[in-house]
Length: 118
Image (cartoon, rainbow, N blue to C red):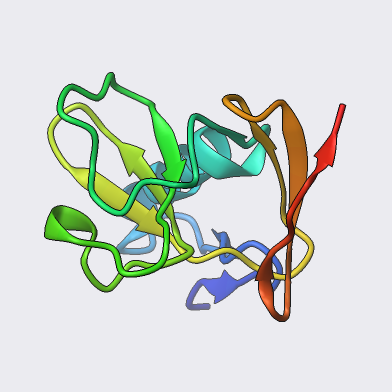
């Protein structure tokens, strides 16, 4: 049976033993869980271009009018994997902690909320 995609997270599951694609899809599943699925902590959401010296695992919400490597990625979660930016499209209901603002924000139909201070 070909793998199926869980609609809330996009994680693939339901592989048959030895099915082709399992290893690459499982790697993607585990990276997704570690980067955005378990605890989404965002360094900043006001940048339109990537910072100069990101550290492996740094996460940002791309501000409107993203530029450079972030062009066309507005409102997505950008994760630096040590050598390139990986982008995740948020789903309604995602919560994130904004480190620089010390707020919790939620993704809704209209985009990321203003956030609530904690």
